[in-house]
Image (cartoon, rainbow, N blue to C red; front, side):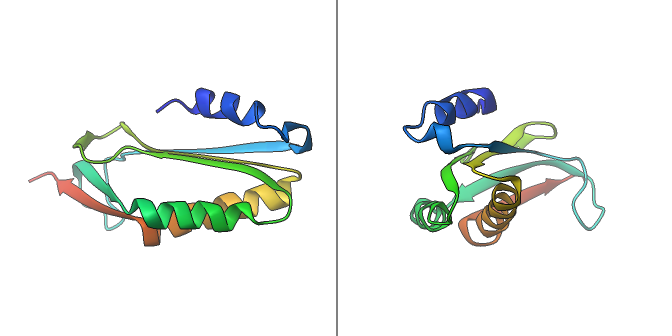
Length: 120
């Protein structure tokens, strides 16, 4: 996953002149679960059809120019590894921040399933 490459791709978008903000999320594997247990790693599964639907729907938001998502799936990830890159580009910060937040939450709740590995 290369966030800078994703940003560069957005900047080459045919409507790049409309972009006033590019906001990025780089999710990484953290050492503790939300419940406080120690984590040694995780594995992600992605529903690609749902991901396409979510991105297509969020791109319809007025002011949004592009949304790119890359998720590392199908392999065991260790603490500190990149899990997901999300880049949202649009006209003004209020729009871009809201769409990034909504897209991220939808991906995490509807599109992906994670299996955490806990330290014994």
